[in-house]
Length: 94
Image 1: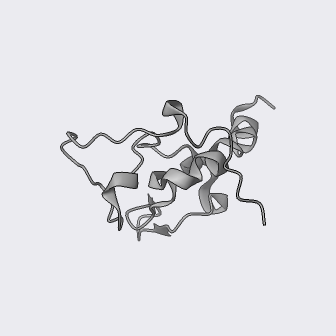
Image 2: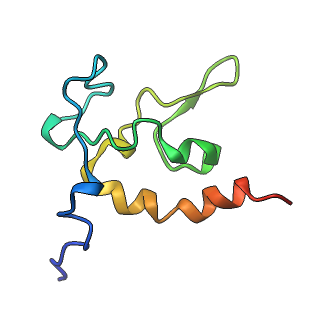
Image 3: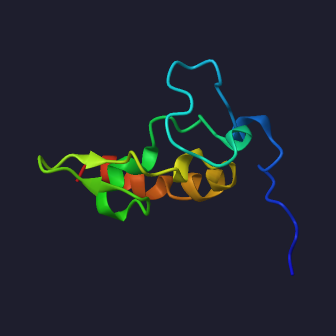
């Protein structure tokens, strides 16, 4: 079994917890010490149904991520950054 942590796991740039924020915590998470505010506005939102998070669409067709904690989990930093290529594809001019 591979117990080696990814190189970003202990780096300061991969985690930020803003406990003084007026909305903290904005989602229910078991351990607030591991609540990552780095992706406060989730970059995966733009991927729509392909984001992989726990979302729903409202009656008006707006994506509601209230029940999604994926970007706020410390261990998901690498998974989010790995998908930046998909996000860049959306922004690329055709």
